[in-house]
Image (tube, rainbow, N blue to C red; front, side):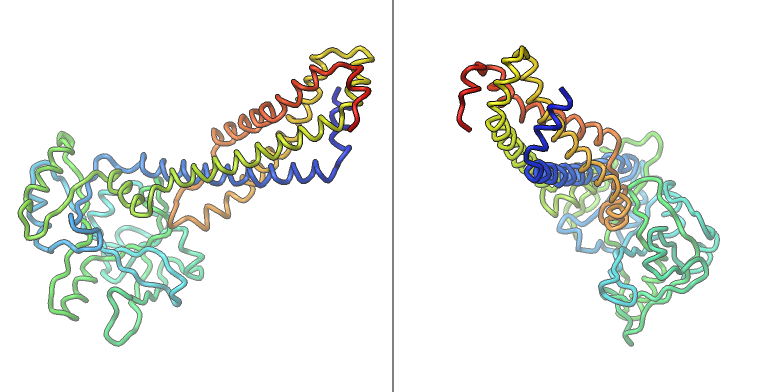
Length: 387
């Protein structure tokens, strides 16, 4: 039976190769798109439930008044606070962009245990206001700079008056154990940014967001409500959410990406399913005479059914398997390319298993109709059929 399957597929090798090629592309795209969705969802699911994020109720792009921090620290249940401010600079060239944040250094290291220093030390970072921490994923982008090196970052939101770059000394290189902090970020001292703001404008800079951690016995919902009530009537209203909800809202600013990606994946699957069904129908029609001979020799209806079904399964599993393999091969490159936007990208084992199951299902669905029609053929009619 295996020999007959192989022989029938080689009857039109170009058509078979094109079908396999389309399956490779389809399953590669399905794996990449599915991995993107699962990585997004994993990042949201693993966001800290014991950390709250305070932002302006107007927009994430509106800074909070500097005075808000002290009052929020006094809310019952709040253990620590950390100010965050997006810096928005670049290294050497505007195309060489990555995230930079001014933070309260002591609080940031305390509140984010997933940040693990693999080079340098926390003491060096805390002891030098001009120092910074960089993620392991930034080392190559920063031309291999390591601990002790100086990194020039040109500020666009916070430019120096003479147009020169901000110089940060790398005190440590970290690797995050969770997607909540990506490995392509530079963190520097809030005090340094505050000093610049006062020197340039004479005003005190407010944080873009304030991150809170809670006491062990504190209820996150109650604390969030208490914080929001502080400024319910202004001067600037605030919105306090869990870190997971904050991340979810951030992604929804770009639209419902999971739904969009899922719709694209479904479209790809339907298109390739129709293509392979068409291939199998053509193949079955061309094999009508041969099927008549096989039936005349005594092969049962079931044998003929599985002969056609075997062809469909072979095409689907070969093309799908190669597409899945390609997705795994390019996984490190995609992970590196999307490290700052989509940390933790992975074509996981459950995803591979689901893709293999989908390849089997594709073969069964595509082969069912032509296989059933072939099994119902009368040998006399099949032998006399004109192809």
